[in-house]
Image (cartoon, rainbow, N blue to C red; front, side, top):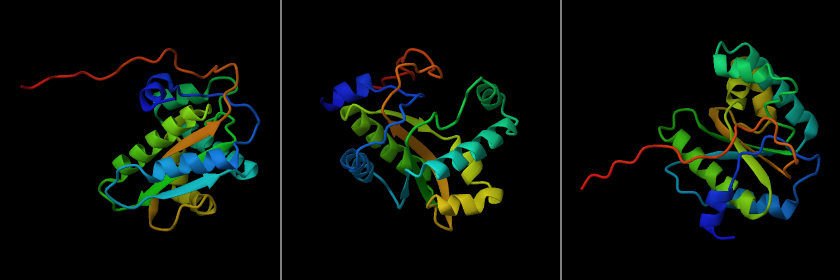
Length: 184
């Protein structure tokens, strides 16, 4: 698969099989993130521990319920909804709190990871809902346990695994987005 094929076939997978990702595939995904263009430091924390993933999932679910954000509250009210979608691997991308390019740095790394996962035949999804829980002072010990250093803030996350046949929380067909204006 070439880069163009990965870009155009990548999907946001929101349902996973209970099957661990191979270590050699995980290493390729992480390395792809490390090669992303960036303008500063970022931390990659890989969570394979099922009990820790469940605690992060539950804390995120709770924060979504009480967020006051209509979209999140609607999503979390769907029967069977879980913010981490049962993925066997959670990758957290955090940056120094005061870094001016945090979102860009981590988003570029995440996109590289998503494309690498696609090339490897794995499902993946870019998510930001764990930021609600892991950036909250009430959950600081959970964030530390998840590998987010003091002085760092979670920017985004990537979930990875083998896609389940039914993607019931999918958002429908992919479509090109954004407008283009050529200025000559």
